[in-house]
Length: 224
Length: 247
Image (tube, rainbow over the protein chains, first blue to last red):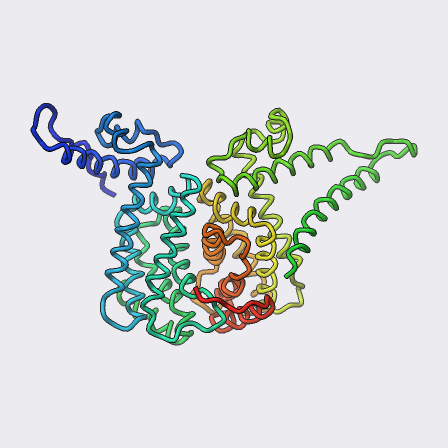
């Protein structure tokens, strides 16, 4: 993995530059958010200090506290942006035209690609969030519910048998449990290879054995 | 499922443990006189450890592990700081012991739930029902195992996997049945854990049993396949007596 770009290269020049205050603040904010993700993913949330974030971002302490109340506030702001981005990518993949089962496969593929593309962000998003305290429970639950709702909205088939109350949750849960474990085991970049099995797991409650196997084959072709 | 019965068994088992300890001491003692003391001194230690663990479970449920302090634990357990440090070196090792305790409770419940004569799908369903009933009776324990345990040590998912796979595999192998699915058995616990955590995070920890059919499905599917898993989910749902509500 190539070393991440030095965020301090994005610092605005010192001295009088006549740039609007808003732009300066935005530059600082962006660097701080990128920094909190990197530092937390490496050291863990508990061990991360505001000083570490400032060092990584090349931003002064005073500016930090003008933008964020504390480390947790900064972490939660970065987390919200990441989850929003993930959701947008998944939503876009799911919105493509085609049979429902293919759209589910596309959405899964988009999620796996998103996590694999940036292992630090992946770790930050699914593992480190839990360390911030009770608010992480709400955060997690909200995001989970939104993904379930997204997939539920578009269901074009009769749905799973009445035996299962939460078939969509099972699918979303299958993907998330898998992603979580791969991230913990530091195999994040290999996630896209899991598309066939996850497609099968997500769809089998809805389609039954035979059709889910067919979808698995199709997904294997996409995953190369 | 009678929730009271499960909670009652938990206390009963703690009590039984104490009695067992006393009997062990009685039989091993030289027993020279009817007046020889029989109450062993380590009963106090066991009871203190138990109270501390209970306090940890409750405090984590209320404010998460990260926000829990030693002060919270000692005041809940009504013991002194010194006693805490005598029993556990620090907060982290106390937490590790708490996770072990909770896992042992669930494993115990699962083992009592079926007999070796049961067919694997039946056995898995019954063990799952027992585990979920145990969690429903102790929502704080469910929250600890599915939330804090994972955030304190993400590697715990690997440990869950190591407990679960051999247990499931053993059941199926003993019956001479091959695995018949693409579903990874190691993830069954993580997936169930997510559903339980999601349910407790949504504030519905009092209603964990609605998850029963789905979790039975998760537990059976990796080896029994989709159709068998559905059949077991159906049985679990009718035994629980609640219609499935779509979510």
